[in-house]
Length: 224
Image (tube, rainbow, N blue to C red; front, side, top):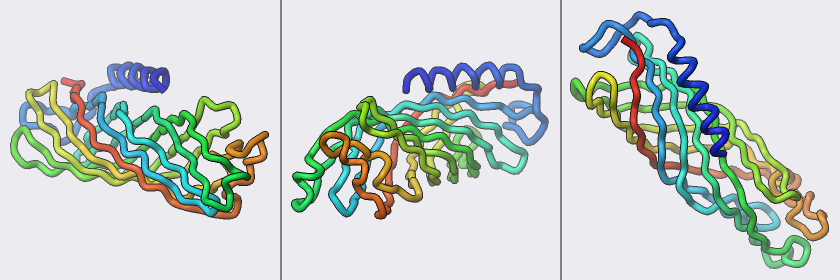
């Protein structure tokens, strides 16, 4: 996950540094839009998912991420965001399935890749509130060899506050709710059973999982 995050940060910085100046509405201190790069750190709420055979709980943990934002003239910022959390998943079967799908804990990485719009609400010259709606992909992967990786389409809603300390640096505080739209038990739970027989866990059942995060970061504004 750290390698993915590092690659995204490096690619974002290089691409934005090479970008031409884009005209439009700007802060009072300048005549151009400031492209924003924001490394983030926070706390991620893993959530749980209930299936016919049992329950999977993803433990909360510290999360890391990065946001690349392009302010537009209409007060909306177009953003790409990544957030990742290393965690542990706990599988607990219901009583009738304890022999077929025994309890198990395994490492699980949670990753979200999103594109979306952020509506900025000026509160003062240096402070902005914002609300965000994004869509993208959720990627769940484990280091356990018998657990399949899973990709899911997801949407997220969020909001927060930006505090600009000067024309180049600011602070960002936010909260987000993440919703992978549909989970099918046959993917991430493949291999929970003994001898690789667990690939059928949850097949035919669907369930949603709601996750969230609270985070903060340092805004770097690039441009004239």
